Image 1: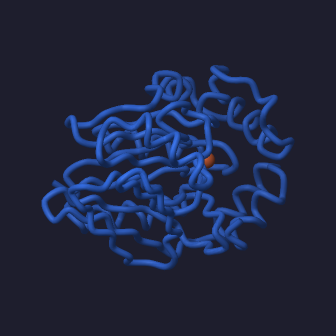
Image 2: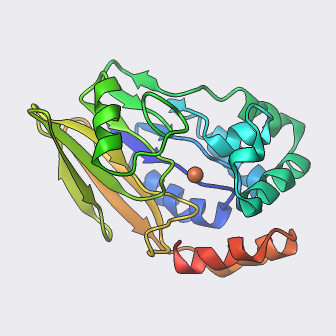
Length: 246
Ligand SMILES: [Fe+2]
């Protein structure tokens, strides 16, 4: 079975396009989305329409999705992120607002085999940044394999005999072999706002037969995404950071 993992699209339709074109070529069995469809970018409706049409096997909400549909306050957001939340609230259709409102809270467990969460298994809003967060996350992860998002960094943490290790996944076409006696926490990286100084859209494929997770990066039309952000009168910094990959 091939599972396509994608997360943190953040209203960037231009970034989502090549990622999903690739998924179609790869004969994916199931789509799994780890949240944050909206926020930051100017194509919230287009992203929600496209993602909902995929009928993902599982899709959970992110903190930006929650803030847009008033399930969370914007007080914890910086002013630039908050401006994008307000813009998204005003500009999406009622149907798409309802779609966001109905998104499940993570973690979710798929086929008794894979856990998914936006931030971490113990708190959907908690960032896994480093081995201490990973240790806590592993203690709440009830499956050998757990996928997370939220940090916008492609990353793999492993736990074997209580020892935690972490590896940042650089570049494209990297592969991690899933071993039987190891637990994994894996972030596929962000589709719509990568922050690892690599401005290419990120995603991953878990092949449960081959027991591999492969990481991919794709160029996309950054200029067009930037043009839309500027035309929407969103803060210009949201456009600039896409080129820098931060
Ligand atoms: Fe995010």
